[in-house]
Length: 99
Image 1 (cartoon, rainbow, N blue to C red):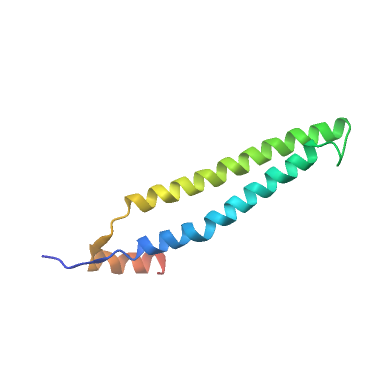
Image 2 (tube, rainbow, N blue to C red; image 1 turned 45 degrees about the vertical axis):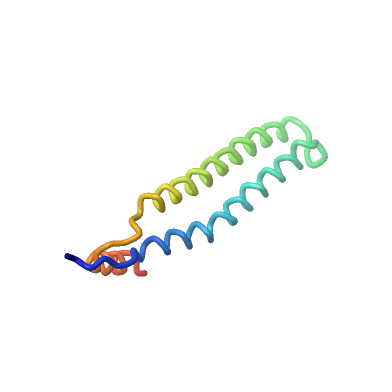
């Protein structure tokens, strides 16, 4: 029987999630806060400001969607990653992902 060892990819994925999750949330919140500031009407008004406001809303939505998608995909990959792999597979993963 082939000896099983801890999957070296799993802690790398978990560390990646711990690293990027707060960064993504901070970025999303910063954009939402700036959009709220802009919506207040105290920053810029007029027809060009209205056009910019629409663009800001679209880009804010895209950033939120992209960040959520990245986090969800990473979480899904973590759940699909085996805890244990063969020693040969572990070595392959170490080489492939420079772990």
